[in-house]
Length: 400
Length: 112
Image 1 (cartoon, rainbow over the protein chains, first blue to last red):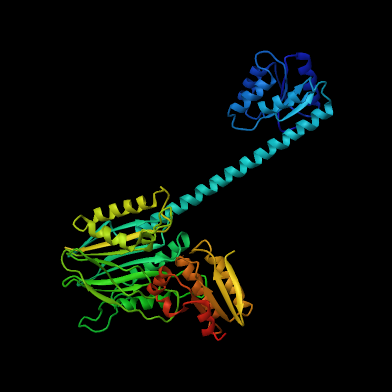
Image 2: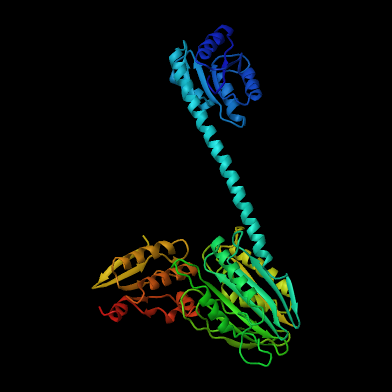
């Protein structure tokens, strides 16, 4: 039994019967229609009907008219159309093809010719069905992958601090815009002990899922390190013992922990720093990351740090730290290079200069304003509505 | 074409032809050059005249090449644009890679 039913269209009942009988003998389930209009109704009624053998001259709607109508409609499947013509001129061929016919038979129809041309039609329909099935599987797989990515992104976002962090006398807000679902950046601000606040920003080389995984791992190591005697609190000296570790030592230890054996392993840049709550004195280490921006109460800003090795790139590196002071009203900005390397369509980069100008321009506005307008400025710079090419993250801190 | 290779004695001079040394070409460049090292090249000059921008993938590739040489060989960068040089300074890679003004100086340093 043939898998595809076939529709025979002809205004002559006896000719219809002739074709039908030939096709039934070949194992087809045959449906009949007396003209183009009836054929259209039959095609709408049966969703598994994809093969049509139609006469040319018919009342109401002729063969070419039927072809045009079928091609104009969306049946949700391919319909293979064979026109039967008494004439044999190439003019007919062109008219029929332009109307949308797939193939031709000339009257009187040779049963073998009918058989092989119909079989060609079956191959086309089988191909179409296979493609539709593959599409369906791809769409479903894609939906599953996207759903997993969204879940992972939610997990990553849950590791970020609350939108506004207030640890007297400091206030902190941030911007975090992954280039895809997941970001290779991570940031945080938290109370380290009763006298100190710690802050950091990480940017894993590359972006997407592998970068995000490393960023999460480093974030977790830093979180674990917050306990007394841990990575962040095993500085020597002091009466109570667990002093904050020097930022240089913290980064050096992370560099040791995250060296990998394989040469393709990712590395990251970071800024890690601590601030004294009473004095506003701070110390930070810049490990291959962008220069933090210190905005004083005057009209100028300064870039902190002399650079440093990235983390996990090369073993046995030493990391220095630089000191600074955040006086009341002053601000500190950490940002990933997704900000400064944000490119306009002509390739021009947003750059450090423009970023400094922006934070200076908005220095009397709220942190929220600075960050919202900065994100807008970056999107305007890019012009296109596409996602950022690299993950964007900014950490803004102010001492009240 | 990613690189143009020429020889000066036992030194392989590799000129990178793309303006952006980024994630789209870094893995291929890394494989190409690591393959050369595995074939026995020990003295490499990387001519970065055409390169205007190096991102984290490009830097990662350069470090992988450096690690592939291990202690067995030497690599010198030359004709490094200012933007790229400032990135190398920021990451202290200018202390890891030797940088010369041009290929002639680089080859002289490697004992051409």
